[in-house]
Length: 207
Image (cartoon, rainbow, N blue to C red; front, side, top):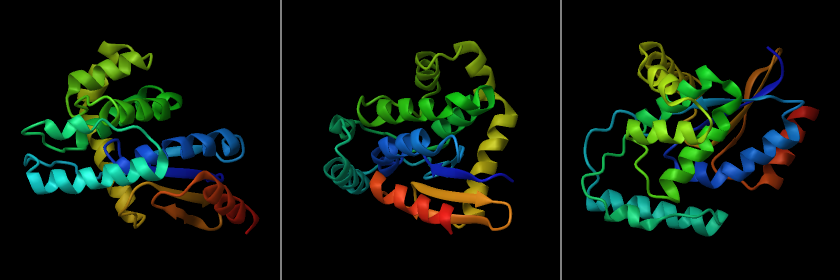
């Protein structure tokens, strides 16, 4: 196992949207030395109950906090929706589908899904929207649709969720480092600005 980083995230995690510019900078500055893999953590997969007013208020508070802390844009008209089911499995499976088709495109797709959900109020639990976002990311619609529906993609998505749990990751975003002799080490869990993350990565490399 070569030295590498694993980014654990969810397409419907507001702090992951806040962290999006940070992980972009990590990949830009460390990608040559430390390739970054994406692991889908599974924030609320399989949710079937529509959001009630209490959940809306809780999530809105998180969004406001992320916006204030990171400056990332949010469309708060999302909370005018009625009957929305906050199931993070479909966009997670869409990211896995893109990863299977073209690993190099998965971070761009994750960012596109984040922006669509948080800044554009698009329903990223809808397979049709996920297909449109894949097309916007340069991926053939029909190829994506077939991969998104494949049983192997569903299984790999569940394996991602299970792997995150095995690593002890219960909060997102999370950044993990791995190398041969030491296995995996958690670099950071939760939002941190890039200068802090950069320092933590350098400390791990030197240690």
